Length: 291
Image 1 (cartoon, rainbow, N blue to C red):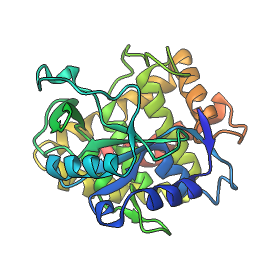
Image 2 (image 1 turned 30 degrees about the vertical axis):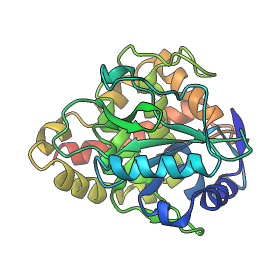
Image 3 (image 1 turned 180 degrees about the horizontal axis):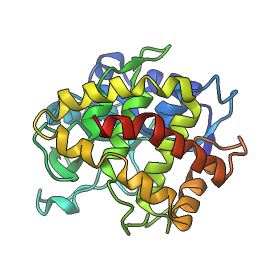
């Protein structure tokens, strides 16, 4: 991974992507979180190489295709993992659109899709045809929550609100499961531990007083995004986090990802991480689940 300054990377992205294309995008993931908490991180860089950009509105493959064509015409290049398929099926074989900016390999962008409200699958691939073949736009079921109440950076780029990213990650992992990351420096780490670890990291950076406001924000998000399913989803909210906090190995995986990620350089131990997770459960998740 590369350690990058989140504020400088926002500036880079704003400079590299034409302004008229940015209206269809917002930043999410670790980069968005590191930018939001840049003051609390004290100028600490973040270990990342990718910038997750969400295309909106839901299913906007036309805008995504136009953006990709425009960017590649401006010198952006596919990463080694981004290559076309000759057919749209099977959709699971399609490759995500990942692009390096002109003349640099310091970071890359990846396009994600806002799901339709009735998406039931955890992840879908939306086929998108470009001039060299077929690619895929990954659509995660709960990513739509991250589009709510977006914030605007100093350079005009929109980014996901931390509380909404935390809720999306919680909902995505009602159990720890067995799926592990298959490549990169985090190879072998539980996928759920990475995402649930980020939930705890966000809560720690937000602070206990700040997370108190998450109850009402999360309740409103559930009502708006999942009006017919909110009762069912709320009934198991945080179950994966509870499981992770009671599993020493899973907690160790979560600590590993946060220690090289959002909490890098802050000397947060696994036990400190557990304490923050326990507080989030007591202060926010269980009260919301029990209403």
